[in-house]
Image (cartoon, rainbow, N blue to C red; front, side):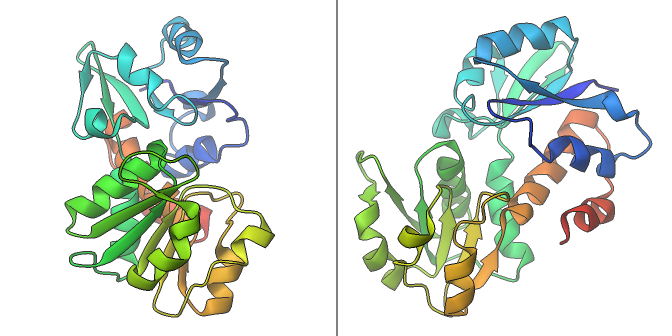
Length: 245
């Protein structure tokens, strides 16, 4: 089985290799490795050299790897982002488990999605996956971003959007000064993408909001992803224990 890897730049501090070892303790430690490369094509060549069977794809290559595979699974093309490619029957397939990572993080916390208004902050690959998943589950989604584009609100609209949205997915960094200007309430449920920075944790906790750190997202996308990579169920209890969930 394998070998597998996580690929990106930077990626050396990723928890994915350790999480994989927790999920499959019976496999050799080098079954899942880290590939930090300057660009997607260099990474692709390195994967072939190492006979890699599948990779988790992280920033900044979530769009680039779509062009290198033979087949994509919905909604990869729609959101122009993949976070997982794997080899099956000689064909490279791209999929996106971030969608389930977001949806299942909310559902696992007891939060219903249908009919809710949701704000996704950040319009990159993670943000687009979040928006797709929430819309699929029946939420009305608004998106805010630093760079303006059609159908996306500027970050200055976040305070007004929070008045109508009870669900929030944040995929961008905030410094403490910026974060302090966000007015959450006890009615908000916030999911942060980053498990290293947790940029909105302090302001959400002070407001009495329900706060879900990035470990929730990491766990739920990894459960789905590791099953696709290995064809077997991971040890979910061990994964939760490892992440403190």
